Each structure stands twice: as structure tokens, then as C-alpha cells.
Image 1 (cartoon, rainbow, N blue to C red):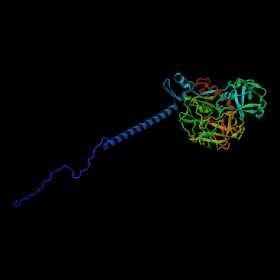
Image 2 (image 1 turned 45 degrees about the vertical axis):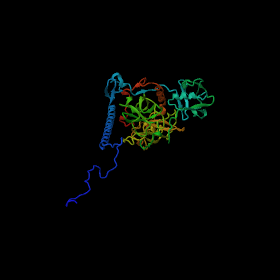
Image 3 (image 1 turned 180 degrees about the vertical axis):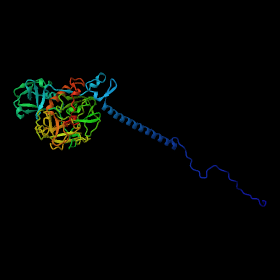
Image 4 (image 1 turned 90 degrees about the vertical axis):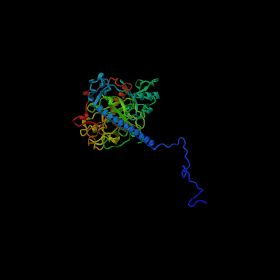
Length: 493
């Protein structure tokens, strides 16, 4: 028996345990699967953003500096000529003024020059049939018979005429010629003369043995793809007028021009007056519908007709430093044959980026306008331009106004679609009174009357390096700034 009040039990007090009440399966850490701290990821992203922001800032700053540098250079170039040897600037109007202001006269080296063709270029194509003729000092012009003519003669002759690409010749019956040419005089090639200049490879003939003469097509010039602001014109695309170029000085459009070969451009002499005589400042932009300054070709020669003055003989030739690539947007226009014989009213087309209206603004997009030829008698009548019209000029447009070339179109092409389907350069935008005024149509340099000069320049300058010529450098007194004449005549800058 236990004493009263005593409590006996078989239970023992619990032992304190370190085990959790609800144990979970233990996680085994494996190599390579540690979670990266969140703070490290945020720091990396922030650093990347800072680097990217820095790069963008540098690019923007460099872009601003390049742009500013470009415009500063354009501004300086428009006012000064930089003498590289003496490392100094001179006012632009002192360059090409006949006086050396730089060491070694470098400011008088790359200047516009003038050239007078005192002799007759001995090869030509005549009439719309493109009949080949050669010139002899004693016998004059003679049509070339097809007797003994070869493909090599075709290539040799076309090279003499300038631009040659896929040249073709065909035989044309003497009886198909205009009446004044049917009785001669004639000439024919001698055997073994395939590579000889055609004017020295021929011998006079009383008539052609086989009754045919030679007709030539020397290139694929004047061809376009699918088939105007010019006042009253409509929008155009360069693929339809691929010979049209923009002549630019210091980054700005000054005049138009026409490719007549991959390296030669025809324009107007009056485009190079005043401070525009330094050749290296000019660029020729081709292949563009919309006006731009990028991608222009460098120029190594600008040659004016040496008889230019008072709007007469208003023509110039520009030689590119290297040929342009011929394609859909760049293709020469054909020079016309002599005595093309266009009659009043025939349809012509003028193109350019000039003013949309008199005292207006330059068009950013190429324009075209169809206009008719005006007879020389009508244009030189007292009611129109009178004695101001010379044989080296032709008029085109409407006497009632409406459509006309304008400022900025100067030097650009006036073209005619020949029966053979090629466009031919018949005129160069030259001058006029106002734009599209009644009784004051546009006046153009008559390419037909200036073909001898054009061919001679291309021949004389063909293989001659820049600044190695005997052409006369233009002096200040040779320049006639027609834009400042008091009687209102003005070149269409």
C-alpha cells in the first residue's frame, strides 16, 4: 500500500527533440543550378543601357558635327577658293580672273575655257535618213557609196562621231535621197582602209557602182523605257528622259544639261558666267527624277563656244572625270543629223527642274512639256524678237503663252522624236523674256547649226588630259552676263 496522498505512474517526462513537427523532403543542391541574385541582373541591365545610351549619344554628336561641317564647307566653298599649296583662302571671284593669286597659279589652272572650231569636222550624217558624208577641202561634202563598205568601216566612222554603241549601217538607194543629193558628188572607201579615218579612206566617184549610199546609226542613244516644272508642264520620270542632268555648284542646282555620250554633257554657255568659272566646283547629277545633290559626277573640263556673246552661240560642253554607267536612268540623247529639216509646228519636248512660274520656285521633281517649233520668220518678226534671233537660235512654244521653259531650265534639252523612234537633241534652253509670256516664246540654241563645233570639241578633247590644252582661258572681259542686261533679256538660270 502506498501512503495516502502519494501518486505513482509508469510514464516518464518527454525528451526535447530538434526534429521539426512536419518534416519536409530535404533539397539536394546540385552544381550549376544556383540562382543568381536579383541585384546582379539589375546591375547588368543598367550597365547595358548606359553603354547603349553613350553609343547613341556619340553617334548623334558625330552626326551633328558631320552635318555642321558639311554646311560650313558648302558656305566656305560658295565664297572662297582654297589655295592648297600656299594654304590660304582667296575670294572666289579672284579665281579664274587671269591673275595668279595662289602659289604656282593654282587658282588659274582648273578654269572654264573657250574653243573656236576654225576648221570643218570632216564627217557628218545628213537628213533624217542619216546619210554618211565626208568633207574634202577641194571637193566639199560627198555622200559615201556602199561599194566595198565593211562592218569595220562602220565602227571606225562611228567612233569619229563620238558615242558608239552597237553601231549599224544600211544601204540606201541613191534614188531615195532628196533631189539635191541624187546626182552626187560621191565617194567610196578604198580596200584595206577599215581602220583609217573615213575622210582619208575614200576616193571620189562619179556615181555609186551599186546605186546605194551608206546610212549609219552609231549607237542606242535616245532610247527610253516606257513611254512637265517647266511652266505649264507635268511631272516626268527620269527613265523617260535619261539624258537629263542637273549641273550643280556648291551643292545647288544651277542649270540643266544633256548627256550626249557617257562622258560628255551639252549645256548653255551662259550657265558659267560670273563666279561660276572654277571647274572643280561643278558636279553633274544624273539618273534622278527628284532633285538631289548626292552621287554627282566630278567634272574635269568645261568648254564654251569661243564666239559666245549677246545670247548667240550659247552652247557649252562639259567633260566628266569618268564615264557614267549607262542604264535605264542614264542614257545619252542622240545628236541630230545635219539638215534635219524640221518644219514649223512639229512637236518637241522640253524638260528640267526650273521654276514652276515666273519669279516662282524650282521644282523638286523633273518636269516635261510638249511645245511646237515656231518658224524662224515668225520668231524674228518685229512683233516677237526681231533681229535678236540669229541662225544659231530657234524658237519653240506658244505665242499666246501657257507653256515655256523658265529659270533653272537653262542648258537643258529640247528634243524631237525621229521617225526611227529615237530622241534627238535639237535645242538647248538659252533665253527668253520672262516665262510663258504672251508673244515671248522660249529661245533655244540651234544644235543643227552647232554640230560642227560639238563634234570638233569631242574629237580634240577625247584623249587630252585636263589642263593640257591650247584652248583660250576666258578673261573677265570675255564674259557677258546676260541676266543683268537692262533690256530684259535673260539667260534662264
